[in-house]
Image: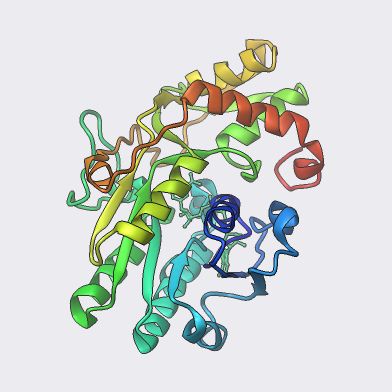
Length: 315
Ligand SMILES: NC(=O)c1ccc[n+]([C@@H]2O[C@H](COP(=O)([O-])OP(=O)(O)OC[C@H]3O[C@@H](n4cnc5c(N)ncnc54)[C@H](O)[C@@H]3O)[C@@H](O)[C@H]2O)c1
């Protein structure tokens, strides 16, 4: 897999090594600002785990690793919308060219590729839910780069018959998420008594999924999904950013005076929501209770200051 030193990838590696005693994972990660070896300290000596520092855009690196793999799961990406607005170039490079490089290597060695994508590729909607065959209407350079990767992946299935599967999940939360993202950012700022800067009126809606539910969802697609198919992995927990903010403050017993409203994000999508019936037909459903998982997550950051204290964005 790629991008295993990031948030979802590290949780996924832990899940897979714990569940499948016969599997070996090779983790190819460039260790950008978002990649963190501390995310995998507890398994770094596991004999079934190999870490390779490298870039998914580099043909030679990828070509060397792919022949010994049964499957490629591509988590590696530039993943932060705000950064894609101020500097889109690395997003095009890693998310588009990187995925292309992996697809080419997969094609040459006939290896299945699972592309980890996002609900953001569908764009924004006021009512209803996105289904897998809805058109893609991405609104940020991040979501456009992920949508481009999805389209490329789909074309490799149609043109070359390469077994390609795509998962599109909603907003993940849980341990080991970089403190530039909403929940860890507001948690560590609230812990330090610093202002929580909310875009616009805070009424934008996101569907939240606990990261371990996404991991079991991806696991299900890897083992039971059909090549050429897209699978929405949603948590069914629609919350406004303001609701999330209040929950963090309430859990940590901090005052609402810490909330500061700031100018809205450019091109800010209002709402995402996913229809997950297709995953249901594979026998998967999210099972973590949102309130409990969010509380546990907030306490994880409270109790693991060593993990976030020195990361950029936590000040
Ligand atoms: N976090 C979410 O809520 C969410 C929701 C839906 C989809 N996704 C998708 O899931 C995947 C993982 O997201 P995340 O939140 O864990 O991201 P993350 O930013 O925490 O981690 C990304 C990882 O990819 C690595 N990486 C970046 N560029 C690379 C390159 N060129 N070569 C090799 N490694 C590289 C980084 O070092 C890092 O370890 C991404 O593809 C993202 O688009 C994330």
